[in-house]
Length: 219
Image 1: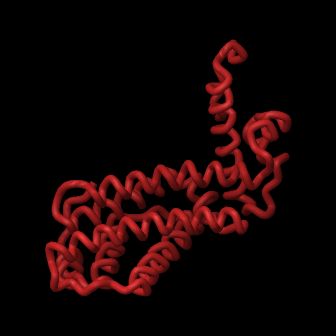
Image 2: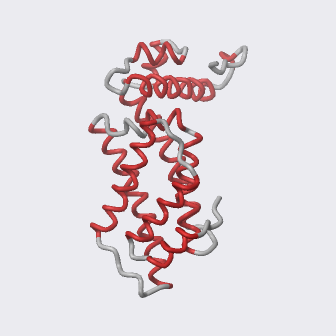
């Protein structure tokens, strides 16, 4: 059921009304794109799903792509904030990574209706592809920062090359996108497996062996 604006909404501050309308349109966009794909989604379908007029849509967004990018940016920023909070948090270094992966995938599970639109279709246009790549670079930079801290405390860990980091990120992202498209939630076992894969790929073999045999405390 769509959330209704309160009675007398015309007396509310304009920014409050617009924020609610943007939320409706993003949810409408997500539902239509998840069902039909970005290419087949139309403004008519989006506004019908959102319960917002065409005039309002074009007041808030210039076109379908801008609406999609707004939704993608809101979702991806929420995900990145959770990842960065955990990976730069307190606690042992391997647990920080596990917590970051866990926070990311569990947030995707909670946002599954949005993820099927804005993650699975993130590369639908050149502009959305660029936005997606920027987010991936930010996530890769966060992982690189974590690796640098690991190597400061464990100098025997080899320095990963740019190719190493790219392979890890592309492998992780490819798996996430494929599973989101299938509509399957990430399990705790998968979170452990993904973390073990990252440890092994970056030469942290003892941590990979440990996380494969034990369940580290995660969020």
